[in-house]
View 1 (cartoon, chains in turn green, purple):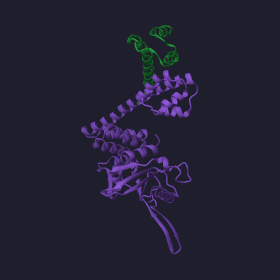
View 2: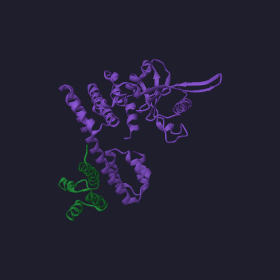
View 3: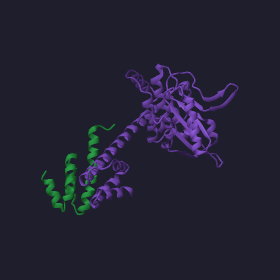
View 4: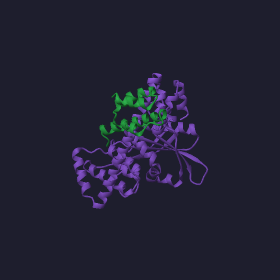
Length: 69
Length: 305
């Protein structure tokens, strides 16, 4: 009923939800324009991002990380 | 889900309907609102055979009386020589543990042998019967499915799949099970439980499936429509459940990897606790990670959620 592509999409969505909440917690002012860019990331990229999360101190750090990909 | 689980879920969700259909005498005196299921983990040590658990133990109240009793339902998928004795042992242990009267029931769901299974266990000496223990037997392969067709009961539509039928009738039985189920107009979640049961217990060959599809197409348009609609709703529901599970998995994976990176390997106890968190709780745990300085903080957080 659910094929493997749909399942992977759902998994990535789940990962995005958590990362988004974590980003908003440390950077409450993060613009939507930045967060929508997360939607383009696959599960490996999201994993990298989640490793980098703890070193972010500003929206610029997030932008910089995204630009470096 | 294994066959055993599917059977158990059927009995749990439709226990009142099961009693109405197969234990009409009990349904006279049972208070249907009083039914509760006793935790199966309590009975794992009920016999020396550690691999077997008692299937289902229900506590119920007698109608209009402040007195309780137990119903023990055992599902046997195989004929077994020492079964009567085992049934007695379960009875004795339940009676000892709960101090309540026990009504023992067995459902034999195997296809063969067709001969009647015993419904008692005796301990006797020459000239002296010490014990005659009786239990209720529901031997499905000795019941004829056609006799249940006019029963507006979801348990009938499921268990018909295990009743006596000619080989050539198999596709027909499946169709009739689904048709009966569709007329009951259960919620999609409930009708799906029966649907899963039917799919698993009456698996058709490709050839039988063609007959089944043809029979389905020959139903009156209105009947065909509600039957098909019901089946589509299961697929829709299955899809949503699948996607939700996927999202949950993604969240859990991400949070666990974060924890590993920060605090090293996590214990099985911790991952087990995380399995029980809701989607929103996983989001909250992600946010809380920033405040944790050690694995102890995580354990404390988990204990509080």
